[in-house]
Length: 597
Image (cartoon, rainbow, N blue to C red; front, side, top):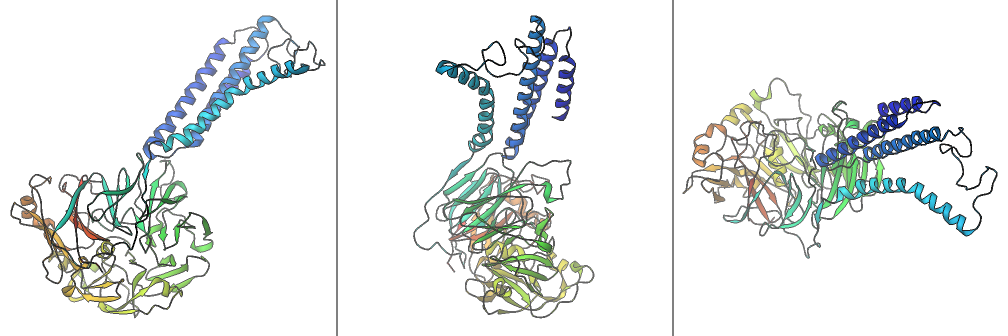
């Protein structure tokens, strides 16, 4: 744009000087240059919009400025050429290139047009002069505000009557429904059933029959992983963050980025965080954010350094001082559901600095928080329905390679984040001895799945043996802890492939030994045949408890518990893609009913 401005200024300066010479060629050069620049900017706006769904109004404004500059310069050069052909004196009354009032008088001292007729002519000329500017401004406004809304498809539903269904505490034997979902990115538990995110948008499914209840589709949008996935565990816990009561869900859409800028700085990576009501699909907030620190309480969303209301999107407060974040990798501290009334300001090892969701300056430090030490990632913090786990004693620092040392355990308690922040008096629940949290099983089921301690075997040996990965389960809904061998719910269940009557099936086997579910896989519905997957048991396709997998082997099957059912997810393209971070489509969802909590 600056190059064009300099070129136009140079051409105008050379061509506007008095003297002989045609001004047609300079005028044509200016017109062509400005038109090309405007076309380039509009094309850049369209390319950016089609790839990100973001409208860059600055590009349209620059295109309008280029057209205005070209029109003004071309008109000036043309009028100067006419003056030269008429042999007029510059600045004289009959000089067409001079700036003067809209007056028909023969001298500058003559009064303007008298009477109504004169006023009408003057008004007409003013309107004619301003018309191009008004038209260009309206076109820019239409492109910027109207065009982005055209491809967006948004449907909502009324809030259901009565209480929504609860998450199941047992695994049913039958499949209520199945459905293929192309481009699946993530499945999460909403307030009344599953919420799915695909490359096209987000939708809520009816837990009874799998039909779509509401949807928000935004073609061209690029959805951003908010929380680390901690290994390849299928479409679970990466893109969507729900509130502790699951009434709201947040997702982040990546904005246009300058590849030449530092991609590690959040100041150069803009996002649009959208918050939806999981019961109705209504959008309750749209928040531009430069960072990806996103946490939700029941009433507040923290995006970057700003807190907004989940009800109406109002800005409530901003974090100042040492609690502010500047990196786009803000989730290394914590991103996800927080407490019902408290947020995680920062994390220092096993210590958390907590704040109420009403006052970011009232900080409280909680120590000895239990993490998933064996996860692929930054020892993730796990919070389920406002609860987390805390050791009752200070843990020694990890020494050596954890993968090849015995899996030690320490005494722990389940505690609420709000009680740690001093906002309530909820009593802790004793959990016994545990080696830490299983982040994947916990997040998939809305419980706190505890890793069993093993003073004799290393993590590597346990992994080669196929587990166990869950030794006990704490259910926040009932405030009870149950050994995995007595737990009928999904958190301690094994999932994988087994031999079926027609070649292969998905098995979901509860930890207490009850029947569970067996789901036949139709021949030809997977990239590799079920028989081939069964023979390749070294790649981890046999039934195991959920745990943080490394990138390979990739999980063929996984599950998520949502209100009303357990959702089993099959990736039929296992073995087809070399890059597990790419969305693989279509995934097949199976709705398995179970008993409520």
